[in-house]
Length: 59
Image (tube, rainbow, N blue to C red; front, side, top):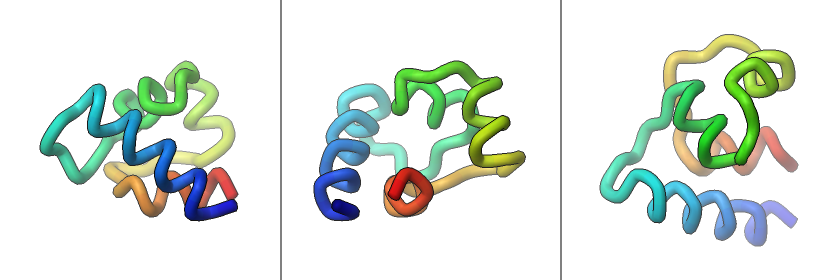
């Protein structure tokens, strides 16, 4: 499941933010199609994440 999730997250991140490797809470929310409040509620406070970290949290 992780590899499928990673592929989806990576594709969406590349589509929205080409060339970027680190994503703050606002960008993570946009990648996931959620609000920033939802991201904070489910993943807590953070400065930046990679697509691998985002996929890991989802799984």
